[in-house]
Length: 246
Image (cartoon, rainbow, N blue to C red; front, side, top):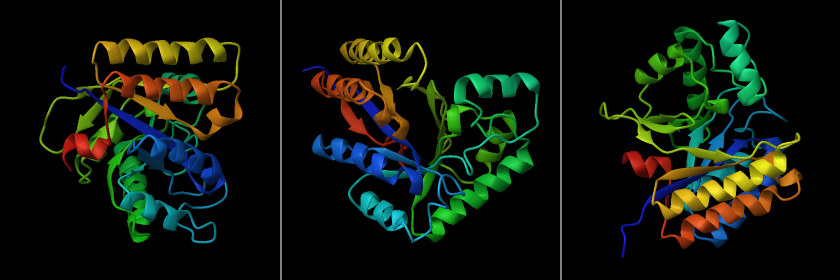
């Protein structure tokens, strides 16, 4: 039998306002015995901080972590931060619809948000070792700040960047929907086709699930078809944390 290849499923934009769709995605993954990486927004995004106990999200995340899912930092506000080069903000608008808050940050600003975000989650009892910037957009200053804050890894759209020992980035393309717009259906077909191609070639890859996907017809089915294609081809579902051995 061919050697199993790793693949990662991540659930983005975890916050009080997205609790219901996030729970929906995690339930689908639990049914398939897939550990996922939950990307948590610690700041006031869509209904208040993730660490607030009123909606009970922090307690739910602690329980999910105890069942084998990973909890990871996903920005701070998940909103545009002004400044930086105009071309970076243009990329932010196209790739992340303006939500890529770390796309153009200088090092000190990035360091402050990274530190505050991780500390907020850790104070709520959430064990955090990794970081995924919104839209996978990280400025050079953000990358420099990450290196000195003790994170085990960060992710871009094409790779997993291990910060534990100077290893080269691990190439793992991320497949993701883009809800809305004329290309939505074509994009859904592309996700499934790409997942099947990568799985057949035993290429490690990632599938990114967003709460907004569940509000659009066909996107849920396409994403789960991509997940099932990876499993059927012998893929080994893992978290980012497991891949870097943190």
